[in-house]
Every structure is written in structure tokens, then in C-alpha cells.
Length: 224
Image 1: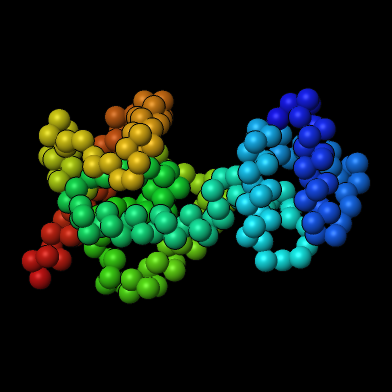
Image 2: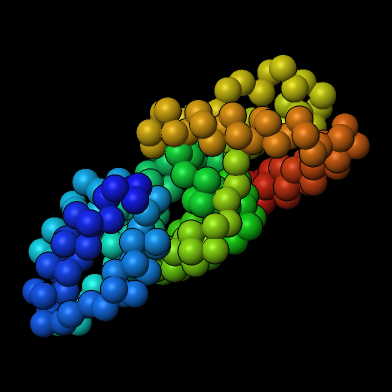
């Protein structure tokens, strides 16, 4: 919104307050405008209608309520969608296939909370039931989302780990896109840009070595 939108915004937000039996001061209106000015007036209007249609409380909606509705729902709502996407990818692709999700927060949870794609696939349903996996993954996703924790690039599977550990980087193949293809490619490309800026050959060899160790452990477990 621009300063030209302040007057219609003021009318809108005062109307919302009136529906909840409240009156906003000039400072209260100005503060809400400042917090929401990154969005267009139509987006704020749509969020106001959505908040009023779904809100179960009698208190005036906060700017955070508007932000949640503009962004498509609460962190908990999005987390439930993401955990379903992860379980579907585990069943569809499995540990051997490299993947890239369309959500960088989901990838951060997989890498930082579950030890990577391969370990997640191996442990899911073994370390905890699907019920508890859904609950724990969703809770972690919501926390990571609020803190802005993200992981770009792709998540290597066992085939890629094997090829890279043997020096056959060109045989790794492209990762499977999970979710919205356009968004997944953006997450993948963001990781490539970061790699070019931050990774040295020595660091990459160290990463491949650690992945190779994971492969050996997985192979040994399958033989038992």
C-alpha cells in the first residue's frame, strides 16, 4: 500500500473494529497501516473478510491474524500440508532418489531435525509411528517457519551419494521435484547459487565423505 491507500485502509480497519465492538485510535490505525503496508489494499481487504468469516474469538483481530490470512493460513496449517507432502515423497521416491521440495523450510526440517533425506526415509515408521511423525514434524516445521530457517538446494539420495563418493559426479542425475515444479526449481537454483559462493572443493569432499559413511551404514543395516 502507499500513502494514498491510508484513508480507505482506515475506513476498512475501523469497520473491522466496529464489528468487534471496538474503536481504534488514530495511532492504532497508523500502526496497523505500517505493519501491513507491504501488502496491497485488495490483499488486506481480502484478509479482513477472511478473518471475520473464520475468527471464533470476540476480540479485535491483531495484525498477526491479518498476516496469517494474507500468507494463506497459520504456520500450523501449512505444516500439516508439508508433512503430508513429505510422507507422499517417501512412499513415491524413497531413499535412493534425490529430491528437492518446493518449500525450503521443509528441507531445513529434513536436514537439521532428521539428519537428511536418506536417514529420514530409513527412520520414518521405524523410530516413530506415522501419527507421531506427523505431529513432531509439523511442530518442528512451524517453529522453523517462524524463525525463518531454510535449506536451499536438493536433498541427495543413496544413488547420488554412491556415485559422488566414487567420483562419478556426472552420473548423479537431476533430483525429483516435489510439490509445485516452479517453486521446487527456485529452491534448487537458490542452492546452486549459495554453493558457488560458499563451498570450496575441500568442503565438498568432506561432505561427500560424510555421505559415503551414511551409505556404508545403510548398506550394512540392509545385509543384517
